[in-house]
Length: 509
Image 1 (cartoon, helix red, strand yellow):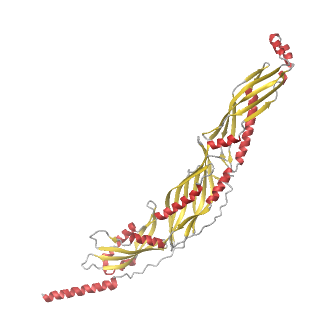
Image 2: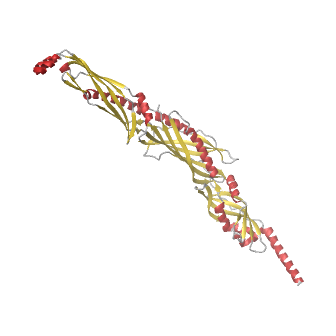
Image 3: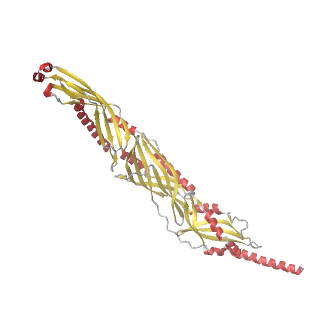
């Protein structure tokens, strides 16, 4: 029995030592060679189209104040003598003053109203015609008319009414505004009896007042149509947009990046009118791209404004390519995976611990290289093996969580032979590796998105600087990840920064 026991121990020791030696010298390290990589073409300088749509609301009070300062406060006129054949010499003159202006939007028109008040005065002398008229009339009436011959007269009549000017402004392609003004004068009915002849205020004054008001409207219309204010303002903001915005460096060992903004097109919708504001919706399309040094883009101001149907109000959508080097991706990926042991089940036949993780580009896929240690628990000996495992996958954006995931995971065929004596038990860990990669191998893009947001907010600060009578409200509301591409060295994520913008004009020059 003692010999049998000693023999068994010797056999077991010999067998175990042999397996240990085999595991150490053949199974302890991977002989798997990294798959050949198909180098993707270099990333090209990218220019994405961004857009900013901003309603410019001009307060009715600002329009009122401008017209109030320019419109004449009084008008005078004189009427040719309409009664010369009946009563001789007569002068008819009038003086009308306007009240304060009121501006209000109604429907699709802007109404400017004011009251008018004044005096009509008729002076003169009844001529010899009165005697002839009296003789023709005869009787007591004729004698009274005859008595008026060669007598002076001075009659005064109040003038009261209102003036309404209606504007239906329209944008023109040459950066001007066509006001489309029409005016209406309404007067209270007043009459005077001069030597038996009725003189009607409305009939005598209104034609002259209509002509005066229409002359003023024509002058104002030409002034508004030729006013370069909108073009000058647009040119100023256009020049402010045409610039490079500093973004900082994507990593410590990389040069600083800049976002080049190059406006290329201006669009506008026809004005909308509400009770308190006239709203002009203007939009700009701009090419945006990432560059490694500050540039001075050339942004010619468009000679024509493209008129389009009604647009979405107050929208900012700026596309920003974010370039992340693979060295940075490897750092983030390893932080996610290094030290992870899987599976988490306690009774699993094998455990795999990730010791290192890197990623490289190949064609339209990424190759994830994992250095792992596998330990099988099924046998008494607990064989282990260090192995390099290669997994192919495609990058996909998770916009909701702002992370980069790997999809279509596929184990490289040579990786299955990398576990040595861990054998079938270790290879059984392959599904766990793929599952863990799908869940844990993610790249957190939130810091890069936050940098993009901060950069745009900094750029918008320049537009929000207060100006006399103009306040610009602009803010960033979110960042969306819209696309992805890569070459051998860099992963590029396209981020779209969303926001709102509008301008309030409370004072016109």
